[in-house]
Image 1 (cartoon, rainbow, N blue to C red):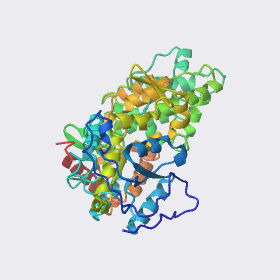
Image 2 (image 1 turned 90 degrees about the vertical axis):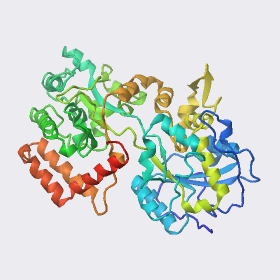
Image 3 (image 1 turned 30 degrees about the vertical axis):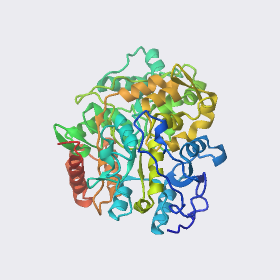
Image 4 (image 1 turned 120 degrees about the vertical axis):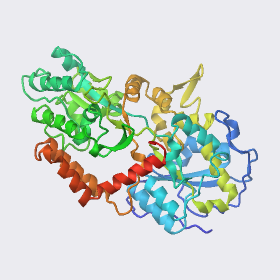
Length: 520
């Protein structure tokens, strides 16, 4: 099949590529033959036993940024040498531009050999017969990859299954990053104990607002800042609710957050905080990470945020430059309420990417095997270490079997994750890449959370999720800011169901979650 060059839709799109995807994707004339995929940990056998006469071009595409030029790409060069490939990865910074270009290619029959899409696209493209059904391949040809992702997330394969067929290789999902953070130095200044319950948090928030914790003689501090409803994740968790719109299990049933009987109570508590004046008055309009800057500037003493924004060395340096005595710490365990102690909800089995292979590639068995070899290699012990840490002796050294990063890992390694097709063991990776943040990452990973199933849910045809979500957020803000009485919560649900067909979406979600076996 002749393939046309991928022409960018926008000349201003941020496109960084090892080599532009052009030419014949599957007609290289190369052959590949080789052994089956390696068993986990058998790094050398992940490559085929007989090298083809010329490198096999593999076109790979994803929405991302930061890819270096091919001559400076140590990961590409190492993989190419190992597998006798010419890996051509295109990374497009804008997700919207990426989606548009993928659709242009698909409409022209000019598929990449391996590309990343969202779950809704997996369903759409598979329904149209455009994607390779991986079900016949997953247990043998992709066994290394399968065993690897299941070793980290035992349910993740289900998340890439459509109509009982596997159409995507899921990338291991991220671990939780967010917790409630608090100014320990403010607690010390006011002789307050670390809060352990929602009621204690309210008391501390009042003290932070009213008792001049920064000592400047002005009433210019608040208990809590954040961005919109998400700032109160720990409150929802304390009431045993998974958060607005979240799907989770409760009392043996699939529950949607809006229908949780605890939801109005959680909203009432949030309203009490806002009414008491202990919350950043701009919390519902904060944008562009301004809430973190407010926290660093000493305008609030608590924030629900990821350790990536609070504990990294550069951010600690930022708030220490403003106030050397500032000391942000995590509240652990989570704040306890009438429904338990949870730092909100988290979808532990959500793939961070869905990698698909075009069905057309099935006609080129040699190239298809090479794609399988690539996926298996980056899932093997040797290959996964490469795409996590780079080159031994350059980006890291081994000491007693432990990876010790060099300065070059931090300087050159920001793009390595683009080659982590199936992901990485997150806890190990974070401890090595961010040793100074090991304690913070550990707290975030171990914090109890309500297990969500949101990534199992695809909206039914005709359902406008964006409009529904926008309406719901606007109404919840009205409830907690007193612009609409909480007594009208049932009326809100009725409008949600009639005008926006939300009940149809919930019923579809319940069925999908049950069909995947998450709730019996």
